[in-house]
Image (cartoon, rainbow, N blue to C red; front, side, top):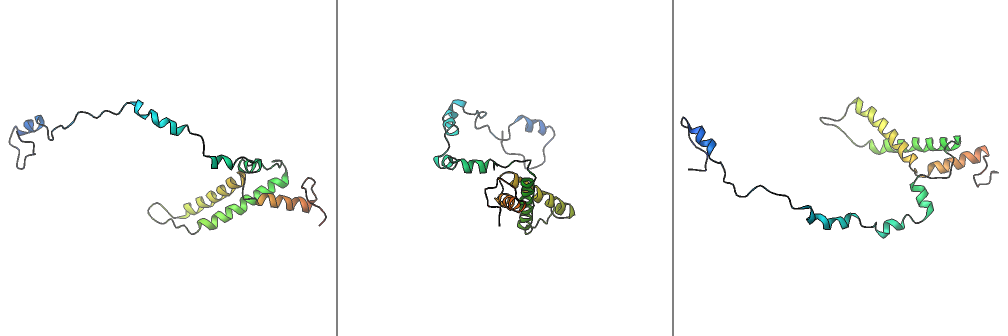
Length: 160
């Protein structure tokens, strides 16, 4: 019995013969995955401690407060809200200029809807960065607002 497929027309009743014989010989039995015990050694890599360089960057309280967004300002303070909103606006404008060079032509890109969506996306990026610590612009704007309106508790001389 030949293992090769027929090269000519199949005679009557020949399909039954083709279905009975294997097209390719079986070389191995069904593959079985290795037991889970062989992967037990990999668990030590997942539970390892963070690297010393990573933990060293979080030893000071000032960087930790900056990373976590803690600034020591009252979130309900209108001057602080205005400063954060200004920083978000400036960041969204910066992101808009950064992404303006990216062309999205093609089958699924471009068009009026994408331009509108990109505007909202850049606004969201700016707000997100400002809420998560920002770039320090809100702090400078807040100090300037406090100095201009003579607010107490800024730590600066209010006679300028």
